[in-house]
Image (cartoon, rainbow, N blue to C red; front, side, top):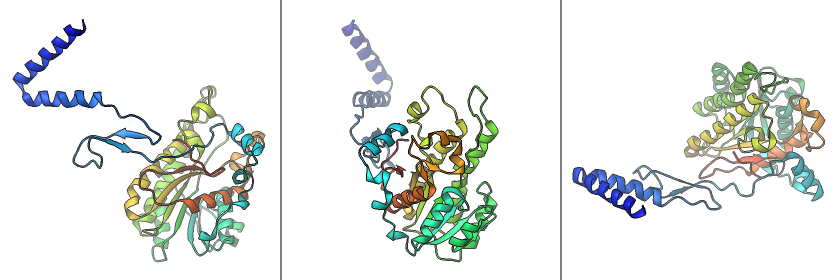
Amino acid sequence: FFFCCRARCLLFLLMLAARSPSALLSSRLVFSSRSAPCHRSNTLRTRTMATASSPYPGECAPLRDQGTLTDADQVARFASAVANNTTRVLDIDAVYESEYLKGARVLITGANRGVGLDLAKEAASKGAVVIGACRSSSKELDECASQVITGVDVTSVDDCMRMAEKLSGEAPVDILINNAGYFPDGADDFTSGPAYEEAIKQYDICALGPLRVSHALVSKGCIKSPGGKIIMITSQGGSVTWRQVQNANEGTDYGHHMGKAAANMCGALMAEELRGKGIAVANLHPGFNRTDMTRKYEHIWDIEGAVEASVGAKRVWHEVGRVTLTQAGCPFVNCEDGLEIPN
């Protein structure tokens, strides 16, 4: 049977060669590519087409190595940190590096409350020039920020462009923190029915919002180039890989997870497009913080190691300082322990 198949295959190739030598060459190329698969190594790799425009014609293009990944199991991760007395997780002040913030111009969206407000307070305390952007300000933001731009709804292109125009005549921003977000209460699953309208709202704010803000500021020259940073405050909830652990056999919160996954994609694409301008982009999971937005999960705050937003802010700024312009890819970092999360 084996020899019969080989004979038939050979006969087919001879007939093909008689009709069109170029077709035979094409077929040989196809068989050749299948016989030499791209093997995985510690650094993820993928096959590229052998075209003149490809930087790796006919070879395996290397993808950015994420290194050791953080643990998907939040409870086990925190328990391990406690058992091993992991300083980075349990005492951020012991490792916190914030010198880079002194004199830096930082713009934070959604800065009037929650994590955004604590990011503003912490940056200001370290000597940064804080620009808060939000729909409406708060007393605490007014007290710590050097400048507050109100009337900024990240779902509005016009609002984002107006903010950029206000800043266009000033010194460029060193760090943009895309922090504005939305996470509603209420069920979002097959039992109660997916919350479609809320899901659209989350996608609009959490994924398209950062794109509107970033595009407006970059297009008006408001982000330092080269040398600027765009930070996406996303979530481990946006990791597709981790749903099989953190949502095993239950799904739920479709709008939240889908919106954050889209936000991560936004960061990944911006990292590629803005690399040529010298602007670094990173996706950061701020960690589990005790805020109004996460109060729906207060029953697991303790067991999963949720911290006050003031502590979470230090964790974020510590990681922002470590963000550099990568040659490929976009870091997706868990600010709890400084390790990366798979997409």
